[in-house]
Each structure stands twice: as C-alpha cells, then as structure tokens.
Image 1 (spheres, rainbow, N blue to C red):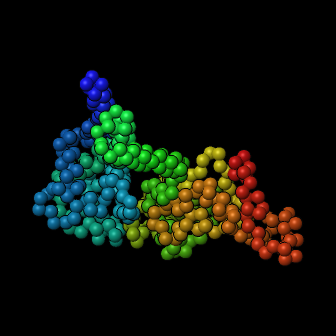
Image 2 (image 1 turned 90 degrees about the horizontal axis):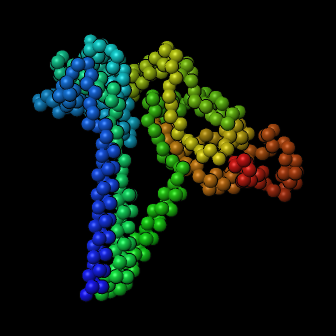
Image 3 (image 1 turned 120 degrees about the vertical axis):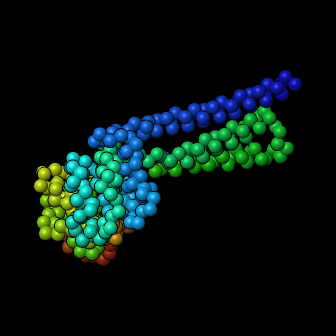
Length: 386
C-alpha cells in the first residue's frame, strides 16, 4: 500500500508541477506581451476617453446612424496579407501629426486627386467628431501601430506532446492502469516522433524565409511597373550586371517618371508623394531587404546576371505578377546546388568563359554538347564558402 501511495503521489505531484509551469508561462508571457498596451500617450490636450471616442469614429462604431463607409474600410490599422492601395491609419497619422486640424480637415473633406475625391464623397462626420479622429491619429503617431502578438500554437502543441510523453512513461513504469500495454507505448512513440519532427522542421527552416514579404515604406508594385508598364529590371537595379548586389534604386531615379506622373491609378497621390517629398527633403526611403543570405555565404549578381546571363525570374520568380514583392525561392543550399547541376551555361558566345580552353575544344569536337554550371566548378565549396 505504501508503494502504491508513493507512486500515486509522485504522479500527482509531477502533473501539478507541469500544470503550474504552463500557467506561470502564460502569466508571464501575457504580462510581457501586454506590457505597454495599457500606457496611453495623450495627444493635443485630449483625454484618453476622447481619443478612444475618436478611435470609435475611425472604426465606424460611431455615429450609430452612419451612412457613409467607415475610415477603417479603406485605411488598415493592422498589416494585411493582401495589398491595400489606400494609406494605412499609421501612414496618415505620421503625415498629419505635425499639421494643424485645418489641413487635416481640408484633406478629408476637400480632397485633391481623382481617386481620393471619389472615395471621400459625402463624408458624414461633423467637425467636432473629426477633431477626435485627428486626436486619435496623433496619438497613434506617437504610440506606433498596435503590435500583433506572436502565435504560440506550435509551443502549445509541443507542451501537450510533452505531457503525453510524461504520462506514457509514468504509465509504463509506475501506474500500470491501462490493461492494453501497447496503448501507452504507441502514445509515447507517436508523441515523441511528432516532437522530433517539429524540432527537425524548425531546424531546417532556421535562416530561411521563403515567401517573406515585409511592409515597405512605399507601396511599390512590380506588377504595375514591370508587368503593365514594361520597365526593364536593369533600369532600376542598375548594378546587377557588374556588382555583388543588384542595388536599390535611389528615389530621384523614380522622379524620371514621377516628376510628371503624380497620381497612381490604384494608390492615388499618397504613395507617389512619399517619393517626391523624400527627394525634396533630401531623405532616404528606408526600404527593407527581402532576400537575405547567411553571413558565411557569398553570392554575386555580377557572376549570375552579368557573366551567366541568367534572367532575374530564375531566382526571384514572376516579379511581373507581384503587387507585393516577396522571396519566391527558399535560397537553401540544396536549391543552389541543384540549380548549378541543371542550368546550362551560355558558354560559346560569352567572353567570360574564353579561358576554359579544354571545354571549348570538347564542344567543337562533339565530345560534349552542354556545359552546366557544376561542370565549371560552381559547386566547389570555396566558391560560396570562403
């Protein structure tokens, strides 16, 4: 009886400890993630209640008998997976934070530009309500956009699997309550195997960011510029053929076209104005790099584009179809190695490869009919890891 009592007590204490640990994790993680959300910066002398009321007007919760669409129907507060051509609430907040109410009122009720005029027909907010909206946006400009809490689904699943593993081990060694002994063994093997799979999958993904598509300072669409207007990649990425990096075009390059074109079909004047203002004020647009390789990897656009004559789509995918630019390929080592094995080199009429005399002789003699990147050392370790 004492042994049974000890075993039960041991199992109960273990489960209690696990339960307590999980609850403590959620308590502290919620506390950390929620830190700062309770703090409210009061803008322009307005109270917290007035700013909250302005937020309700922006979201369309007030007035109750609203006839026109709410501001949030066009202007996102949180980031979205799909491109919203209209400026976000945070963009508007930043633009008008240093401007007085009259300028804000004029922009909303007497907009310039075809697209914005069509969108702002019959706004039904009174002047006092609009002042509260301005207060909310000023406060938003100071606080920044609301943070999206990270998903912990995988962590919860991993912890649940850990609980199952613990129960299965205790059942096999101590409890022995389940008559069919194979059940806890199957539970243990299944849960442990799934945990191993999760760890391996996360390890493989470490450092990779396929489909990464960060929000950029300007809503620039490759589909519009490349696909619809036919602009060549090299017009903007001028260094791709002779430099390690393809380069990010300076804002004044955009003005070659946008010195005249000041209103976009989709985005109106707001996005183009960001570029024009940046050039006028001598500021840089802080573009976010999308394609990132580990520090121990060397890659040169000059070798692949300039010498290898590869098309940009080979690595970057159909950019002419992308409103939002994303990382198309996973850029893993296996992906690069396989590309080197499969890609035919533009070898004969390319001065870069004139030094490969033996291969040229074999081609002329008919001994080989194709040169692939791996044949000229592309998969040698030191080419990329030096």
